[in-house]
Structures are given as structure tokens and as C-alpha cells.
Image (cartoon, rainbow, N blue to C red; front, top):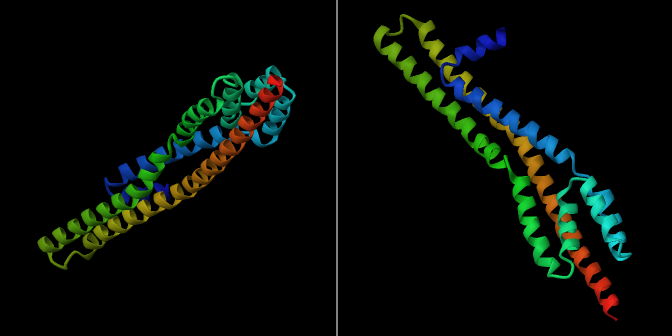
Length: 203
């Protein structure tokens, strides 16, 4: 209750700040659940081995059982192995990267918007304080300090929202970069393996 009372003292500008925090929490949970499903690092080498053995059906079955952008890109290469697999994998990779980036612009916006909303709340609180001071002079110090307290609460809340959003955002960006590297690595290996297998069959 004490915490809620502090938030209420921050004034009406606390409403969008709290809204931003709830939105950031929702996106963070959704992205954590999304990235948690990726298990390509242990399965992708096995798919490459099956491709080398020309067991394409078995390799595709693995990609269907383990949802992962890397495996879906490799599966596209298998499906299009006789018809420019590199371009097909590149197109699938673009789609998968777009899915992985979903929600990140929202977090980035909240990181920027949080402190600005806090600053706006600070300005509103200070304006109210000076308004009270101009009407009653310095004979009502509690009213003046109340406006200053409102300003400081908004500033602190905006910074807290930005900082707590920045941590998962940087984590997701780093994870996105790692997955992008994996996609490039295994797509290149898949293309080379398919070329080798098809070339040996032609001979």
C-alpha cells in the first residue's frame, strides 16, 4: 500500500509511465518464451550429417520436431536443393529474422519514452509548485514541496522503467545477433553439403 501511495503522489503522468512498464513486461515475457524454444545448436549438426548421407526425409523430420529459425532455413535449402537453395534459404532467413525482431522496437521506444515522460511529469509538478507559490507565497510550504515530490517521483519512475526495460532489450538484441550468426553459418554449410551431394550424384 505504501508503494501504491507513492505512485499516486506522482500525479496523472504516472498513468502512461505505468502503462509503459506493463507493456514492456508483456513484450519481455513473450520474447523470453519465444527464444526459449530454440535448440538448434545441438540439432543442426545432426541435420548436416543426414544431408551428407542423403537422408533428406529424416533431416526434414528433425526440423519439424524442433521449432527453430536455423532449422527452418536448413529445411528450406533441402526442399529447394535442386533449384537455387541459397536464394531460398536467404528468403526464409529474412522472414525468420523479422519474427525474431518482433517486439524489440516497442522495448526500444519505451527505453526512450520512459525518461521523457518522467521529465514531463517533473515539469508539470514544478509548474504546479510555482503556481501555488505565486498564489499563496511562501506561507504554505507543504503545498510547494508536494509539487516538488510529485516531480521527483515521476522522474524516478520514468528512469526505473527505462533501466528495467534496457536490460532485457540488450539481452534480446544479443540473442538475435547470435541466432543471425548461426543462420549464416549453417545456411552456408547446408549449401556446401547439398552442392557436394548433388555433384557426387551427377558423377
